[in-house]
Length: 253
Image (cartoon, rainbow, N blue to C red; front, side):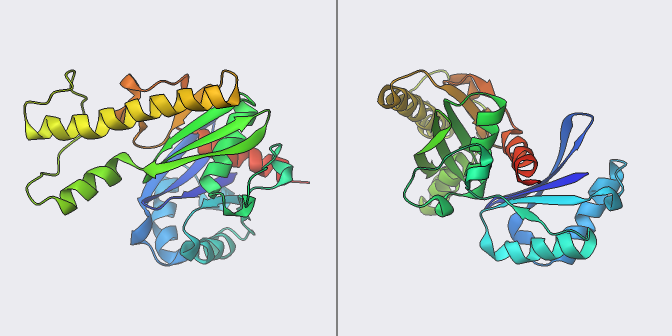
């Protein structure tokens, strides 16, 4: 059984595939510093879902936190007795990377692009809502680049931290009006609508520059906050893990 580890700046997602579907668990990235800490929680999560950790025979890692790479390598070697496979941009992925420095592309973005190309379309935009919001542009199976902007919760926390009188609120709903009649709705409008409408405009700009229609795929833990007003074709919360699965298939001789 494959174990997929997607390390983000805020959360680390562990996933396995059972009966054709991904089973995922999310842990705080900054909370764990050793392979033993990771394993103690992961073992419990696996076993609570009827999975014997000894059935794991391969580990695929997508990491944007270099300081944890060694820890996760040790986790793989010590407890699963395997050499982990780290996702990175290369020509075996079925995608070409004609950008300035392919090695600098975040592993999560690499996985998203691979998943988009092999699961959906060689002409794709992938929007990933995490600590940052990224857009990845793929045309004819070539990664052209994209954008990076602050994530929804990153914006909220920054506003709360730097504005003494503004509260930390929930963003569970989008006000219908764009004129808020409370401080809370002012913030919801200013973050959620600004993000979604700004992205909608960028999506149209990208399609115009590329010169064709593109499939718009949305993923990420915070995407649901704006799905109702965001232009998209597919919401796929597993696109990163699907890309990691394809990466493993394409790199096994």
